[in-house]
Length: 137
Image 1 (tube, rainbow, N blue to C red):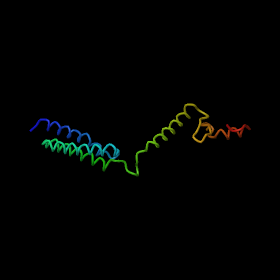
Image 2: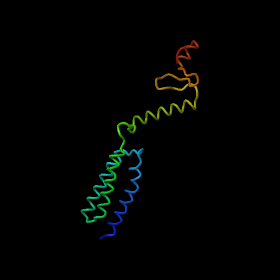
Image 3: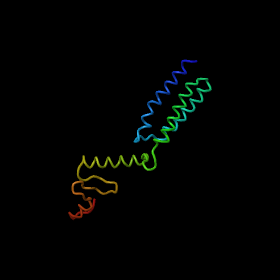
Image 4: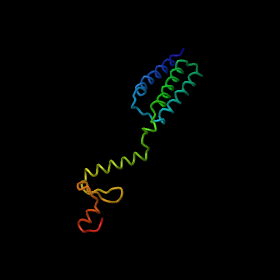
């Protein structure tokens, strides 16, 4: 029996212990891009350790791979509550920046449709110009 076999088994056991709270947390969302490769690595390590005669390491790696598979099944984002795509995150960032600039700069702030919005009067600059008898911006 090799001492390294126990070291790898203990490492796998610790990773299972660290992953258990994620599996228990109903609000946790782990992307499949994280959980599936980790599951595959656990299984491949398990096979590799088994072929080297490191039975305890193989069992630990398989167990860690199975923990990742449970996380993939139970805690991956679902269609009813998906994680935003990269494009949606950029759009959300743009909207947040616009709101922030409205609060910081104040009155007339450029908007997405090309008009300016008066944050205090809640009207567009074209309405403002018409009321004053001027042409639109």
